[in-house]
Image (cartoon, rainbow, N blue to C red; front, side):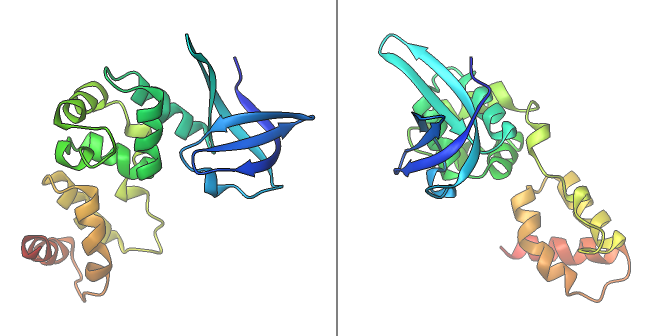
Length: 194
């Protein structure tokens, strides 16, 4: 029913915020309540969930986060509180990347997510979260050379996760390589060290 609420944040608690919209205080559960500040004007993207026990509002800083929440809800065995806990523990990009890479073990570290649920998340959402994953080829040109960028893409194509490639990128940027092949060799050496 609601797309967003725009008002003033009047209260911040560990799992929710209160947003005053024209004199009405809405209690909104959020994965990141401390991202807001009291008395701050804010637009909070809302998902309203109606259950037998009541009506609950869930709020997000961006439409993308709201979309990811809805995708998590579509997974069998994931309810609103579980989806919120998963999103609170990880940023959207890292979470989407883990799902896209099929990292079941990584997903089991979230509250209330066992191996079966993690496998279900991957099964249901893999291939559907491309919009949430920041690709290495979208890095600003000034951060890495074209040769290094090509090497990073090649390492991803070889099956390494974005997290692994991100970890070695600063080290590779310091290397004096001049071709993508040289960066790839050095990158593989770093990845195999672990």
